Amino acid sequence: MTNPSKKRFFIRPEDVRGEWVYLRGQEYHHAVRVLRISLEDILNLMDGEGCFYRVRVINISHDEVQCLILKRNSEQKEEKHQLSLAIALPKEKVMSFLMEKSVEMGIVNIIPFISERSQRTSDKAYLSKRFERWQKIIQGAGKQSGNFFISKLEKTMTFQDFASFLRESEYDKKVLLSPWAKSSFATFDSEMRSAKGHKRTLVLIGPEGGFTESEEKKLEDSGAQSYSCGTLLMKVETAMLFVATANHLWNMKDEKFS
Image 1 (cartoon, helix red, strand yellow):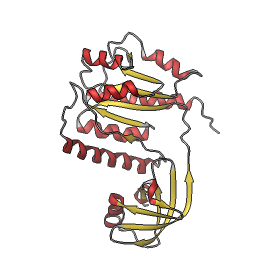
Image 2: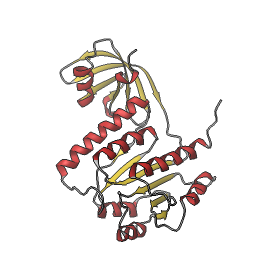
Image 3: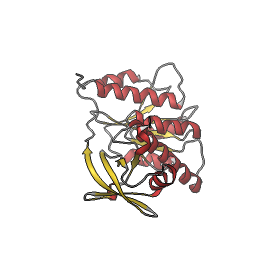
């Protein structure tokens, strides 16, 4: 049996024109050169922002696939709690894991930044290549899971730029995970389970070894509130799964199952 995810492709919203949609760029290459699609093939296309298209291949040129839309669906993101993650840049293997799991767990935004104890490269060419690779991982996870929405990945920021972003951002709650915090994550969890739970939350996850004392102070001065996850010292990927699972449970609280 053919894996249904193999004929799922991502498009940009601007690639849709009336009853037509066009497959271009890397997705064109994958469809035509790797999977070798043919005229009259049926494909599933997603824009990562809630729109899904079932289409028929009408024409294949040297740089695009023209498709006729047979069916279109759209979904609104209705989660009561929308979680974004700001992550001090970890090792590449860990970051790749985080990209994939973020899509599966419904993370809205991913914001990588550089801290004193994180991976500290500032080479723009390197970071640009990493961004492209992470974006591919996100799209691949979206195809595999069939999610209409995929996580939005921001460009990697310096610590100072991230602190400025944090100060100016309009999240309902900005949570800094810290083993030295006086408040327990359980307290925040109770807030989120209540009717007054915050709609948009940003959680900051530090590098292996944690943020430095001066970094924590800077982040708190920029609007973050520190919470401890208890006596356990978690790896970056474990902390991410911890908060993503909590967020999923907060959203499931109001779901109805038949």
